Image (cartoon, rainbow, N blue to C red; front, top):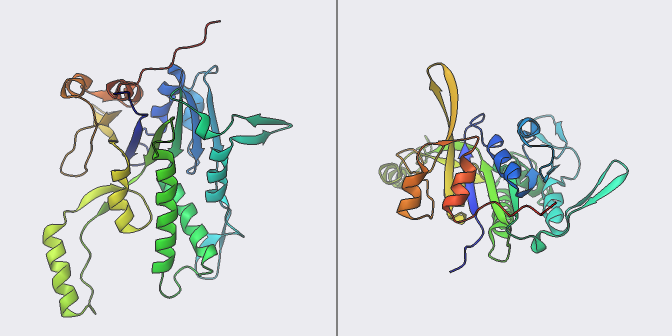
Length: 289
């Protein structure tokens, strides 16, 4: 059976090396197309080789501070702009146009990277507030949450779809989620239900997404979920990649036991190359000079 393109969720706390871990893939020969929602791309400038094919577009909605809340300044466009750039990766750079074609035509020599879910979540939220004509914090926000969550899930599913022949790597921060807290004004039946949930639902780390339900479910869209970790080793910062689950977070990699055992300790700076190899994907052949 032929390999399917990689679909990788790479989660971790800020500063754990998620963005920097992409550099080795560009340097190895893959074409990187980065959807930047978090504005944290400076590290790539220091580690991506000048001849690497790495293209990055940033998406951000201008923010304004209102009387009580902070929101998008004007009509938010970041989410829709990112969706459209996948239709055709075309933009103006100075006086020249860059045109890298439609993502539906890209193959396994290309990796689309979303950096990251936190910024995408914010873009979906601002878009939902605008399209539902809702002020943040005003009244029942369930409609806004549902709209934003559906938009975010649809965007991820587009990039994970079998029809997309390119690889996809999604970066995400982590947040701790546990059972719902018992409110002072909850009815007794509600309190009892929450007590039951408190016994059944463990407190764990989940990727960032719109609302609790999507955050707990979003990793299910990815066959591979790995984590970037920062450790203090003899007073020095060491960044690595974890691929085995533990009591704090569910991780997974659809590789053979032999391939997983061979991975060993993965440094963040080079580990993504070995993760892709374990999944059956080697760097594309470079064109002959």
